[in-house]
Length: 277
Image 1: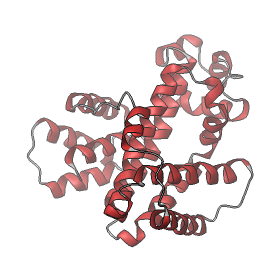
Image 2 (image 1 turned 90 degrees about the vertical axis):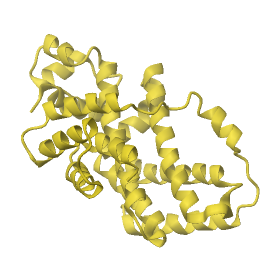
Image 3 (image 1 turned 135 degrees about the vertical axis):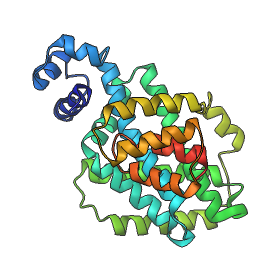
Image 4 (image 1 turned 45 degrees about the vertical axis):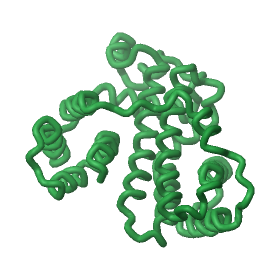
């Protein structure tokens, strides 16, 4: 295992037990069995480590729900699949989700808050695309309110099973939220959130990532991943970015190969957006 990954996994154990603030770099290095010097070769500070964990966690969620929205062809199943995927992904990463929800206000510096804001914007765009696809002009005046209603459902129900040990029936929960969302979409008549307000809230807007930045990410992942079909697929996708020769069907197949690898989900998400798949 690469040392950086080891530090992230061991630090997560401590953060889950003690929280961000109460966990020191000294404790992390002792738990990892490494020196402080080795730690600082991987991360400049504890904040940088926390940011890396947040990136990993949010990349999993964003990539998973984006894939679901883009690849669920049946509109009748789309909202259900969206909720199911979102809660399932949070459940898989529940230890870190608990820490993030409990401690983000107390522990985050300005850089961390901005990063979370950027991920929030990306997820709002995915939700908006789903709303516009499902309800079309029917919700034109209230679609931004609907985004916040969906986010409110997600946040409130997440806390039920993260902090109150409520048994998680993903199918029932997803069905229940589909019904509630449809009722709001079809019967809400008084909008509050306008496009102008959304633009004000979302300033500065998230910058689109460049092809050069994607290539840089891919180089890093190719170096990190052990020999595997994911590594080979990632290399071919990099070559495709540099010199396009493959058909769209092959590119889709290569993206499918890397989609479920935890360290490839983000580049898979970025490439899907780049190729508009």
